[in-house]
Length: 248
Ligand code: HPA
Image (tube, rainbow, N blue to C red; front, side, top):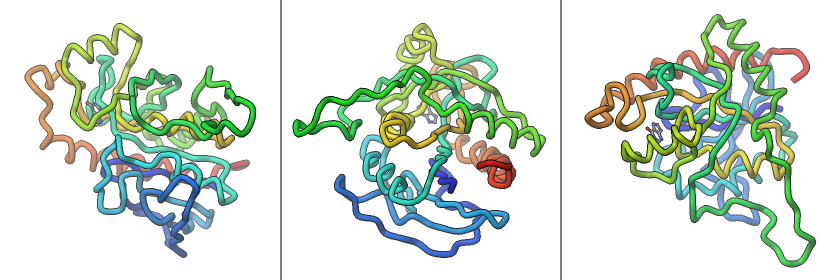
């Protein structure tokens, strides 16, 4: 089954025929909300709103461990995360959709691993390629079928939030090799890997990052919602094609 984690602006899936909602308790506490199960084009899909259904949980307070654990309690194989980002690279303008292929983690103070215990031997997971390539390719294929442009690749900088970055921080992220910046990509992707879930992200560029483009003098927060709404319509279309691709 495919699971979709909705980010800012995506607290429900417009094209999901809801069948049931389940509250899941986990050893790591409560997930952001109930998991919604339903069908899209006849295919089973699970949905979870990362920030809660009322969008009340800030990025640094999301219980990423509980969210990913809860999804892993079902026959979920693929997880698509939808995440808003600021564009650092010049071609990542507001409204662009991208499928990142790398991550740099600048977050701190978040619960980021299931392997904390002292009762078993240390576990390291390989994270050379942090996103699941099979799912990335399927997303690109779905976007092609939907005739929606989707930029292939890019390095996602996971920033701590909830405040936006300074212009100097964005300059630093760029020097480090980052193309876009968001607040939720980590530890989500790392936890998915620890659980063996095939995880990829659709990054929705909703603003120029701080100090760039029309954010040179500051990020106009009022514009973000408008950009986000338009872009999410295109995300829905891509997801619609994704669920019907063979061999999911
Ligand atoms: N920075 C961090 N996270 C974000 C941004 C940004 O500019 N835009 C949307 N999420």
